Image (tube, rainbow, N blue to C red; front, side, top):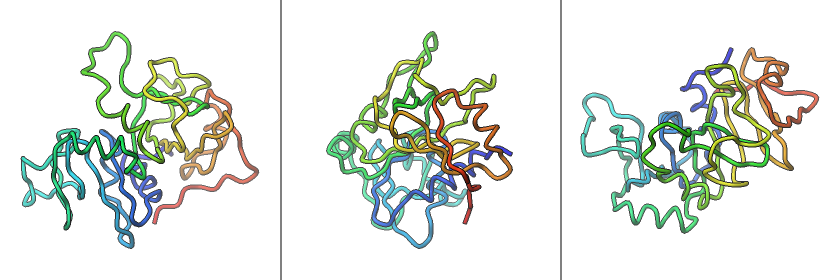
Length: 219
């Protein structure tokens, strides 16, 4: 069975390391804040100017002035700081973000990402994604493996306008965890109950498969 949005976020949270500064994009990435492992300390950065973002609030914790880049209400952990978006982007552009987690429409086997527009649909702009893919030291993409019509979103070459070139390290989809290197997707893990054959059938780009692909583990 394919993973839910929450399960994708849980798997991505395993990529966090103690001491990391992490930016979470809009959509599935924001859910990662709810699953930070208890034995590590990370500082979650929101591009609108919050460093030290916590999980989503309970009803009692709601503060309409405390929001993330997606305009969702959030909490702040002990030691958090609030500053202007200009300072936030200086942090991103200066290479001070260890990991960023982004959503995407398409990713291809060369590490290119298309995440900000679909031709013919109204968009407000690229947002912070352009800066994040250029400034973060590591990038993990969260996405469904295929679109609602069953067409692969892991391609040989992106068909949509690019957000960044040769910048994606890892992808966590609803079916699999994959690395991108040497012009190919490398299958690392599969979702529980999902076969390698299903992943192959839903991956358009070049896919490298080892002899034994383990199922994801959730701790």
